Length: 466
Image (cartoon, rainbow, N blue to C red; front, side):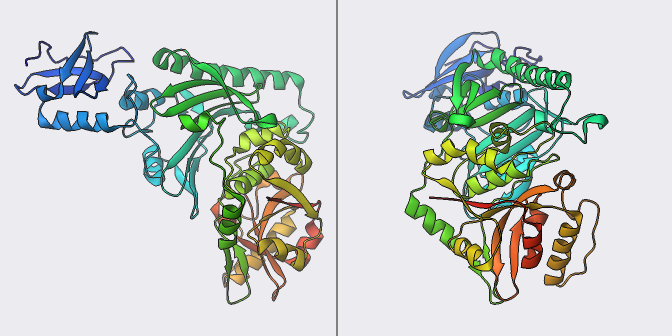
């Protein structure tokens, strides 16, 4: 069979026909076209740059092209007319290496996207970056990018374009987070909505009219614009002018409003118990707790909750958690507000939040740590307390303490003194507790004298359990 097309060497301007493949027939003829559909009868429907649609048998192509068509035919879905190369060009990043993201090793995908490893456990990993508007996705400046993976492969991806809690306040507002000028709030809301609509206007001409959908439940419910591409649900949300974000997840998960398959109670208990590590020196420590870096603003509570929820198998996003709990401009959330906001989410997964007292004591702490249950602890994060934690941890590790700028803690969490972290271990012999702050890997495990923790405690402790 002969092709009647000729190869195009000029720049194709149509966004739907860019980066089309070159297909070669057995007699050496070439055509630039994209695949519309691969049929079970081993024929392929091609669309040329001139807009002509033809159906051609596999046997008309050279061996290399037949191999590519066989690969496409073996896919468990019909490839979308927009190719993965075109999607990468549209997003402005190397997100895809083929039509399916979900079988990619998480680390490999992160390297393509130039994301740094934030955390890796036996059950999951995540890679995050804070471009702070200095990089763009879908031509829009992006503030945060995070890639989530399970044991082996990518599970979801999130971009935050603009978020009220992360907008820098003018100098005159820095000391009064909860009394923000109403005009400033309105201006922020308009900027956030405009950011989201620009993303919408980039996606719509290429992927078509989106459908309206929802993610989450109760206080964590989001209204979204959704495009489906191959097996990917691409979901844009502008939540009440609070933030503009784009989430990508498998379509079947999107159909469950974003929920993952629920872990059974006995499976969760066994997994958590397996995470408890015991050392010869008396240290008892919970491993496999993912790290989440709360970022440049005071999102310690939403980040801590996200870490806990992901540890027990519940997907969460600190930006949505912050919004649901009433986090204001510049950050700042209450434990009570977060507990109320996450009630429906926990209930849907057969879990609940429980207050367990206010004073860290070895016996009460051990009761939960031994089960693999971290404890959320609120306290006064003063510079003196953080310095003592760093000094004690350094001495424990046989190192000399060298405090650098922002090495003792995160400034935004010490300005008003309120902070929350996870208690993840204890040592009865030395009367110490292990804490984990949501400030990045350097703060994943630090050891604190029990006396210092009792002095710093400011509120009740809580756990999330079955």
